[in-house]
Image (tube, rainbow, N blue to C red):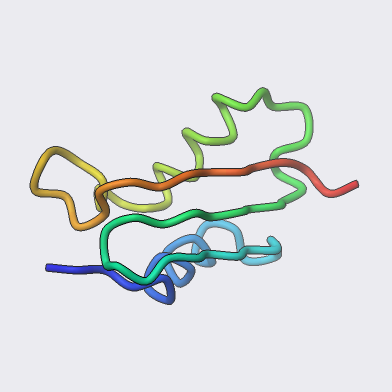
Length: 78
């Protein structure tokens, strides 16, 4: 089953309600997302990206995951 950019943004918004979130992609499997959130301040890139993957609630798990690839950009606001 394919997933949409809007569905990804909705999942991310649940965990990062005040974030600036931009999700791009239209093939149902490959996306790019930028998440800018204050909760990332003081965290390294791996910690930030783990938080984003956690927010996706298993959508990328295994070969049967709905989301095949996600290029992530994460950071705290300037």
